[in-house]
Image (cartoon, rainbow, N blue to C red):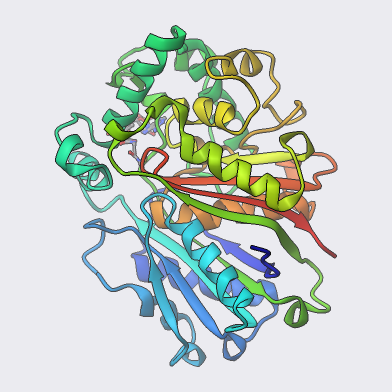
Amino acid sequence: MHFSGRIVGWHHCPFGKHEEDVEELAVQAVRGALADAGVAAAEVDAIYVGQFNEGFSPQGFPASLALQADDELRFKPTTRVENACATGSAAVHQGLQAIAAGAAETVLVVGFEKMSDVAGREVGEILLRASYVKEEAEIPGGFAGVFGRIASMYFERFGDQTEALARIATKGHRNGAKNPLAHFRKELPYEFSLEPSDKNPRVAGPLKRTDCSPVSDGAAALILQSPQAAAGKPRQVGFRAAVHVQDFLPMSRRDIILFEGCREAWGQAHAEAGTTIADLSLVETHDCFTIAELIEMEAMGLAAPGQAGALIAEGQTEIGGRLPINPSGGLKAKGHPIGATGVSMHIMAAMQLCGDAAALQVENAKLAGVFNMGGAAVANYASILERVN
Ligand code: COA
């Protein structure tokens, strides 16, 4: 399906640990995005709110928190969207659909999450509810346990990838150190990521702390407009493709180390966009754990299964390499406040395409890919973005 909606403005709160509650974070992001887009609250036709929650915040039913930003948002149709860690992209794609259906000309999308109020162990328990509870709830270590198991299976089939995972972590932190919006703004030496230590303990299977995205708070919002409503706007980023592929929930029903839903989403996205992976200038991909980035490289067609490690060692996914992956620092260093993540990924891609990415800028960025997933490749959202003005 062709989506004509365009991103015309955004606001991204710095990710990290924040004193503010979800409402304050949401309000900041919404006000910032409206101002950045030069759109009055009264012009908004529909609002999509992304939050996972499941116990991270005591406040349920979050849709109307967006309305706290401006009284003019009162009475606007507002819907909360949820699809685990892909919640933010689900909200973005829902906004595109409202415009494609002719139901809205201007859409506000906001994603937020406040994770740091609950204790570490409880964070894992909450996140594990996004697994297939009947079979997977006993996996120790929360969602890290799920990806630890995936990493172990990958190592068994294709050999030890400890070095590749350490290089992914190091790249994430190197890029994140230059991103003022990132949770971690500190480089991590490769040797530190490589070796388990007191400061870098094993978390689950072969995964160490440095292989994990952190527990973050944050909010991000963007404004989508139809081409007519966007006329004259100084920055317009369009969607050559926006694809959502949903796979089975139980890992037992899938060859889990192939991320087939991710592969399918990219295949459909390129067919829709008339592109191949070689056409992309950069990709923001869902590196909730370093093993996820490794497998996603294979699922996006950069390397055959088991071969992605070699590309990483050659530096092909660094800024300045053949295909920069996660120039923003990715979830690994930028942070992963669940409901905000997909919105953030689209903003990072839009910034690159508009030449606004400062120290992270990929030279001559023309087409940007975004891949955001919920669960272990269960909810799969692929977008291909390009600047259209
Ligand atoms: N990567 C690198 N460093 C990290 C880190 C991470 N993911 N998480 C924490 N740290 C650092 C902290 O900054 C702190 O450093 P300091 O001592 O220099 O101040 C130190 O490690 C200890 O932090 P703490 O918060 O006590 O770590 P922890 O062991 O309680 O938590 C994880 C670490 C990896 C278990 C936690 O970040 C986690 O659960 N991540 C996964 C979240 C998740 O599952 N998300 C959903 C994905 S689908």
